[in-house]
Length: 122
Image (cartoon, rainbow, N blue to C red; front, top):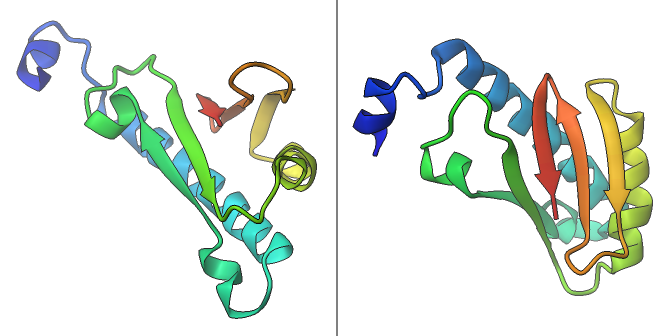
């Protein structure tokens, strides 16, 4: 698949991959800070993490692809902490633009642009 994408000139460039890596690092940093805020004691660092899925996870994204991410948190961290505290922290992050939260949809999601890359977080 990668070879076919490269032959069709729809494979990600090194420059766009660097921007994507920077966006992922920013998201992970905010989620790490959030985990410390809502977690307690020794487990604060391990109570939540970011995992990628979709084309980005498979390594077959095009330059126009968004990043699909899911925040996996311990069960004691509730919906309100995700769409309350984390949402506020993401909104305050200077690298994030075009933030939209959809907490009451069938699949709750937060959509944003980080370093010019569209990101969907569920």
